[in-house]
Amino acid sequence: MDIVEAIRSRKSIRGFRAEPIGQEVLKEILDTACRAPSALNTQPWEFFVLAGEPLRRVCRANVERLKSGAPLEIEAAESGFPRDSVYRRRQVELAKQLFRLMGIERGDEEKRAEWTERGFRHFDAPAAIIIVQDRSLSGAGALLDIGSVMQSICLAALQYGLGTCIARQGVFYPDVLREIAGIPESKRIVIAIAIGIPDWDFPANAVETEREKTEAITTWVGFD
Image (cartoon, rainbow, N blue to C red; front, side, top):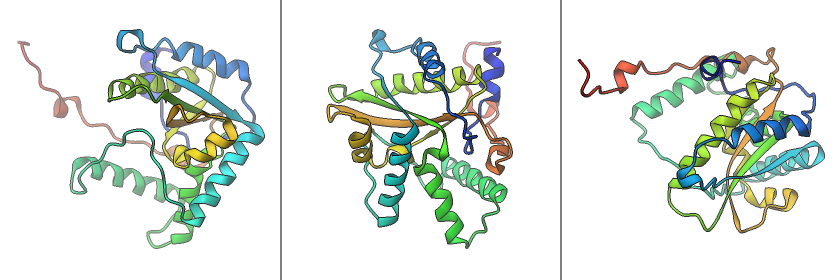
């Protein structure tokens, strides 16, 4: 797939087919993604790739914690934004479109709860890639680099007919991942990427997000 086509066509997939993804395919995707740039070639990323029964156990445990009201834990830095900002508006517009596609009414708390659980179940994908960094790394630099490898994973996946969804919900209970996937305390859990064959009959996969026009967010200096 042409790289420009991949960038323009990539989208978050929130419904997957049940077919398992082979370890060799996932390894090839990671091999490619690890060519992503990093500051001074530090490559501050590591991966734990889950599938099969271990992933199902993680999903079940996440939902149990969520339903019990267990507090969420975020190990990596999280960005905030003002409620009256354009960033909040974009988030709300996405949520409205997703809920409309899924037939979730504004006051339907049961369906909203079910939708939230999907994220904690890694959107029922057959595999999930958990990206971690060593706790010895501090500051935002390593996270910038991890963002680079994260997108590279999502773009490389398209070459194999796979879809992805980057989501924090899958790592909101890090102790679950540590117990089941064997992630040591010396590693900071950053983000999860659900990966699998897209189910194009799943309504939410029809979502189309808008992007700001380049003219609205770019200042050109030194051009005629």
